[in-house]
Image 1 (cartoon, rainbow, N blue to C red):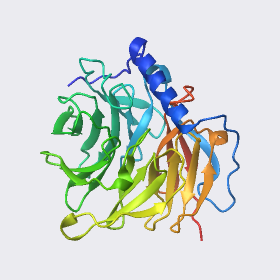
Image 2: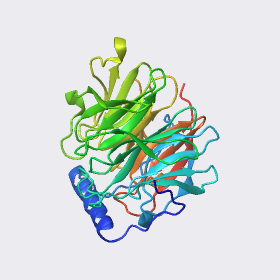
Image 3: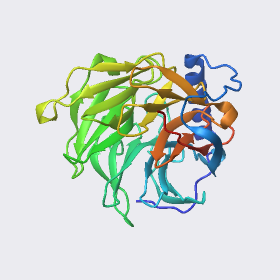
Length: 334
């Protein structure tokens, strides 16, 4: 499998498809011009935000999803460049792998019309699992990359779907995958094998941009954001890890993407992609804006909480300016 130290320049038809795709998403979301939104007094994060890393949009370095190394380094997927990269605590970026381009250039990838690396998680032994949406049956699916190894596909996923967010349940060594087009949560064992549909609940459905998107396993449940419905839902585990009834925990989240929990409780920080905001969602569903375009957000895609720091990945899909990782101190609420 190709492994490269350099990001490819994204030119020609690939960039045209990218710009066309993000234009469609912007139109569907009704994106306008967003000004500064002041940081709320009682919200987290607190203190001044700063840039932890800068990326090059022309090279397809659009950070989509993130996992964290024990030393604080961030493993990220660059969706447009079809890459997995490691971003050091000093902001330096090293490309770990570049995925093969489909024979058709990725044009058949649903919604996006370009092949993209999406969700990523890290196992305790350092193995990375990530999703590749390529629009072809031979490439779309769950991929595994062991430390110092090359990517290998361990499970196929439907080529007419869009595998997006992913989480690992360490109790069962099972990966849970959100499909944004098919409105399905798939499960795949970390050892590899056939993907199984865990749930196709209507609360995960796709209508225009993306259905089920970000996914986390937290407090004995699978939590999923649905971009089209503007919600975050909780699906509790029943016996045998079967899905319980869907509970809507937050509504009105315009173009919600991925999210993270701030701790052991149910407080959430969620990225709202086209409004260039990160919002705090309390256990009661109430929300407060805590970061905005004024702080440096450019189409935030995902959030990572590590110790006392919140990291926000910004893909600049619509702004097309400067993809980045923004960092801010986490201030605990009392």
